Length: 148
Image 1 (cartoon, rainbow, N blue to C red):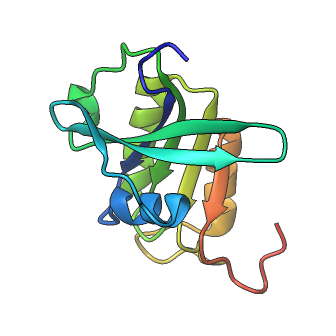
Image 2: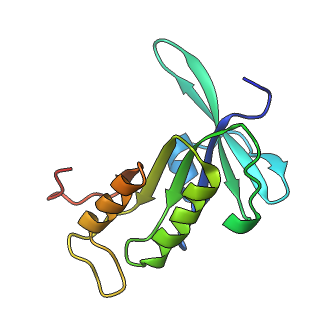
Image 3: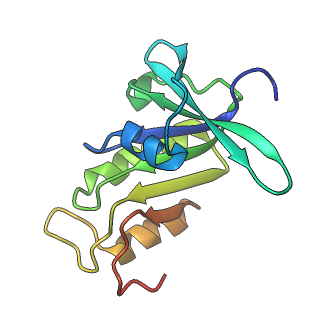
């Protein structure tokens, strides 16, 4: 570790809160977040396996993508919350991907509908978008009929 709180940046491109997702991942949040900069904090996530123990920091920021300083070398992954019912959330997600240059990018939503709503996207459209940008779609509440 380089002393810089290595981890992933968690951002939201919709009304969903990053804090809710972080609490689901860290479960339960037993340690207060560390303030890392103006408008940014990091939640420690202790991971313990049979082979190793590590602490990964889940960073959040209240800054918009244009104001975010991506010069830190401690962000190795990007987790983006989006809403498949709003096409513009993927446009904002693309800006975060372009800004952060992470090798690991997860696009997270509750559930992608099979068919697109008038202002939204279908699961197939989101999967194609992910393939074009080398990221993974994670649905926290997938439907029973989803096989991918």
